Amino acid sequence: MPRYAQLVMGPAGSGKSTYCSTMIQHAEAINRSVQVVNLDPAAEHFDYPVMADIRELIMVDDVMEDESLRFGPNGGLVFCMEYFANNFDWLEESLGHVEDDYILFDCPGQIELYTHLPVMRQLVEQLQQWEFRVCGVFLVDSQFMVETFKFISGIMAALSAMVSLEIPTVNIMTKMDLLSPKAKKEIEKYLDPDMYSMMEDNSVTIRSKKFKKLTKAICGLIDDYSMVRFLPFDRTDEEGINIVLQHIDFSIQYGEDLEFKEPKEPDEEPDNTNYDDFFQEKVED
Ligand SMILES: Nc1nc2c(ncn2[C@@H]2O[C@H](COP(=O)(O)OP(=O)(O)OP(=O)(O)O)[C@@H](O)[C@H]2O)c(=O)[nH]1
Ligand SMILES: [Mg+2]
Image 1 (tube, rainbow, N blue to C red):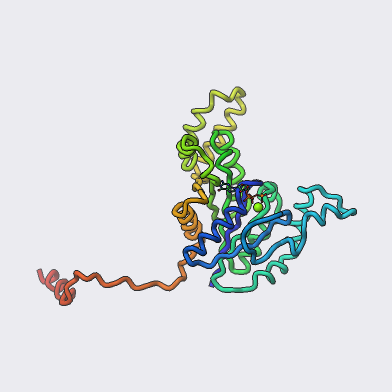
Image 2: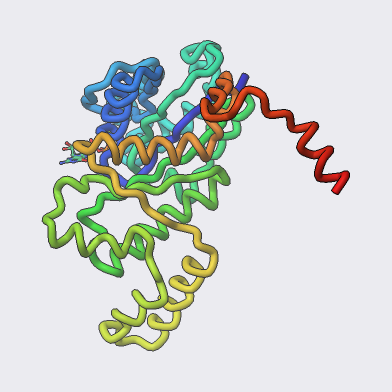
């Protein structure tokens, strides 16, 4: 039986930990068992119960205080994640092996983890070896997405995670509840974007010819391959949260192995319908 995982990623402060705790509450409300693993060695506080916590293995503060290492916060985090990648047996032990597990991994916010460092990919490969079906969930703060160029850079970050991890990914715009009604209307066009027209709308503001060409090529790539779409995430909207969860479940085929219930026989069908006779008559005609 497969197990299921969501890798919750995104830039610092994009709402990863809040997403995890919202999902846990939602899962409880719909009577589903979902658990969270904290993979952020610098996490200070989060308001969900954890199944495992990377800080039991290693903490950024300890690494920074170490006289021989002398790391700052970002170098310290990279060191921690590399240490984690060399000690996956800790994770295996913490996860145990429960069939049909559904686990959210709350990842750190350093963007370099998703662009060029190998640790997240190693984690994905390891989880797949443990029979997990993994879905990437890439969060971007909607507050930073209401302008075309910010939007393009958000998309590029999501794309680089998708390309480097090679797993199905669902992109999410968080903190929708903070947007004004006007900004909400404005952001609709970014949820299912038409990159070509977006580029046309804004090309007046680009002065450099070279930069214009490059931006156009990037927009074309994104549009031609329909690579990035965003789902809105408002933590106060149960229905919206359910839609997000359904998209993720679909991408990892959650529920496919659940027992199928026979549909009820329709009442209106007469008991004495004899299909053999029906077809027999047709043939004879
Ligand atoms: N109003 C509102 N605030 C949110 C939402 N999601 C997150 N926040 C706030 O944004 C801040 C950062 O949220 P976190 O969930 O800690 O973000 P994170 O991505 O886990 O941050 P790091 O782990 O530091 O990278 C917190 O103050 C949250 O309360 C949301 O959907 N709505
Ligand atoms: Mg967090």
